[in-house]
Amino acid sequence: MNRDMHDFLYPRARYQGPFKPEHLVFNANLQEFAQRVGYISNLQTAGKISPEESYQQIKSLWKQVKKSKKLLEIGNENR
Image 1 (tube, rainbow, N blue to C red):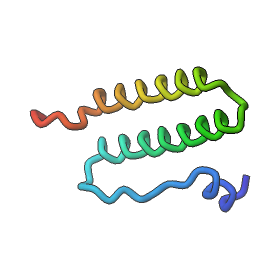
Image 2 (cartoon, rainbow, N blue to C red; image 1 turned 120 degrees about the vertical axis):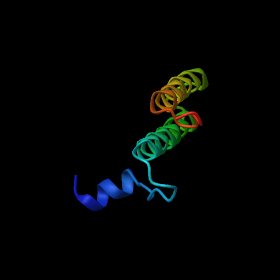
Image 3 (cartoon, one colour; image 1 turned 90 degrees about the horizontal axis):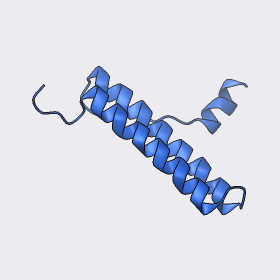
Image 4 (cartoon, helix red, strand yellow; image 1 turned 120 degrees about the horizontal axis):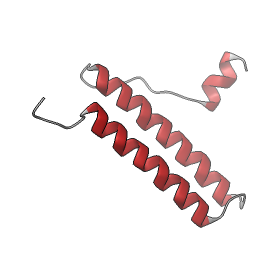
C-alpha cells in the first residue's frame, strides 16, 4: 500500500497536549479506537454485521481502551 492510501485509510492527528510518553501512547490507542468504531459502525449500517455484533465489538474495544488507561496510569494524580 502506498503512503497516500495508508494516510487516507488510517489518518492520524498530531497530539497537542502536554508531552508525556504515556499520553502519546494513550492518544494513539484512542485514535485507533475511534477509527475502528467508525469501521464497525459503517459495517453495521451497510448490513454486513448485526447491531448486536457491532455492539459487542465496540464494547470489547472500549474495554481495551479502559485497560490501556489503567496500565498507563492516565488520570492518576498520585504519580
